[in-house]
Image: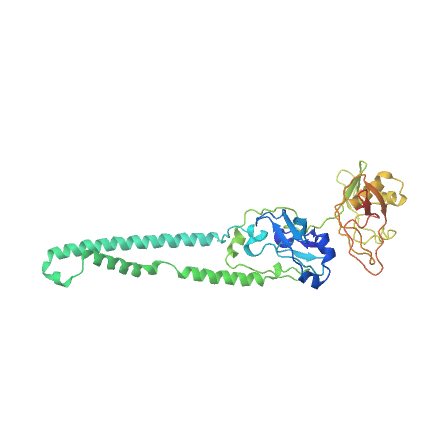
Amino acid sequence: MSGTGAARRRGETNLKFRQALTVTHQELTTVRNMASFQGTVTCEAPNSRLHHFVGCLEWNDKKYSLDIGNLLLRGCKIRNTDTCYGLVIYAGFDTKIMKNCGKIHVKRTKLDLMMNKLVVVIFISVVLISLVLAFSSGFWARDFRDRHHYVTALHRSSVATDAFLVFWGFLILLSVSIPMAMFIISEFIYLGNSVFINWDVKMYHEPQDMPAKARSTSLNDLLGQVEYIFSDKTGTLTQNVLTFNQCCINGRVYARDVRGLGQGRGAHSQPSPPPQENPYLWNEFADGKLLFHNAALLRLVRSDQDEAVREFWRLLAICHTVTVRDSCGERPPAPARLPASPSLQWLRPWAPCPQRHPSPSPFSRAPFIWLRGHSGQ
């Protein structure tokens, strides 16, 4: 079983679990066995459905069904797994990620669109002027030949041929009015703006040591023309940093301890600074990252007399997704989505392995960890 990251495909950071068939996992244990593998996979035609796959593996005169849980999509990163052997089902443009790629649209700025329209208008104007001059030249040449018939021998070509040549002559002469150099100058201006963006100290992010980088030199002028910003979810433009501010248990709200400033109607309050000494030192599972402090709630938790408070923290500890890891050489059961249901059988405190120090989950501050339900998971 391995976890795959889908950040490249959809921007998500949570892991999706994929695992091999039980029969192949048990039988193909060496490289020689894998080299001698002779099987046939029958599956659906290439399509764009990322969350659906139907197939069948025929091996040793037996058939085994395949689903999306046995398929690794292109663009995924394998996590928690050192080595992975697989069989290529779709390749090239038949992969699901390539099937989801639509028509590529070239991004153009408003200035580029306006310049393109101006060039088209100027070119059409030059063509029309050349046509008018060519027709005028043809009429003048025909009238000149009618009046001066004695010079007809000097004009052996027809009037239409002369007008055609005159049209191209005027078109070449007037082509200098088309501002082709304007595109080259604008590209140099865009390049200079990109250099200044890369050098901007105010756009440098010190925590990650990451300066600004202009990946496209043709979209710089749009930065000053942004009118609306659309975000699909929290985390696209923010940092997804969750802080525990308050909770409501059995109808009572427990917020951060506050201190009053002043008296009377204009008095107000603000959160009190955290105590100098960590109030959670009594809890061996505390990681020191919880900045929330409420003295009344802390007393209820330590007394362990209030049933509602105890159940609140128990549910908060188990109602989330966990990734099961090895602990001191013992492999726990498979990862699972933990529901808030009365099917919970028993809990025990989580004790970290003395040889390992895994990073705690956001809810590891609560003194409970889910172990097993009625289904035996």
